[in-house]
Image 1 (cartoon, helix red, strand yellow):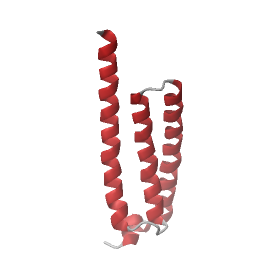
Image 2 (cartoon, rainbow, N blue to C red):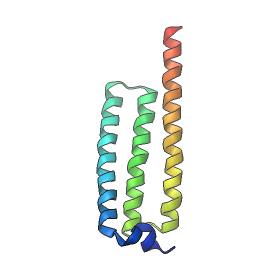
Image 3 (spheres, rainbow, N blue to C red):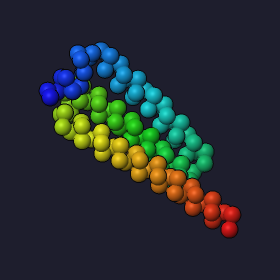
Image 4 (cartoon, rainbow, N blue to C red):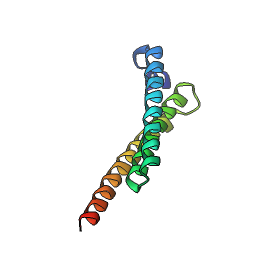
Length: 107
C-alpha cells in the first residue's frame, strides 16, 4: 500500500484533511475540558483522564503529520496503535485509582 492511498482512502484527500482537522479541534477542546476539570479537582484520576485526552490530541497530530509528509506511513500506523494502548492504559488506571480512593474514603 502506498502512502497516498493509506492517508487519503479512495482519493478523498479533502475529506480526510477535514476529518483529521475536526478530530484535532475536538480533541483539543476535550483536552482543555479535562485539564480544567483536573485544575478544579486535582486528583490522580483526573490527571490520568486529562493525559488520555492528550493522547487523543497526539493521535490527531500524528495523522496530520503523516498527511503533510512529516511522519512516514509506518511510523504513523505504529504511533496510532501505541497511542491507543496508552489511552486505554490511562483510562483503566484512572478508573482503578478512582475506585481505590472511593474504597478508602468509605472505610
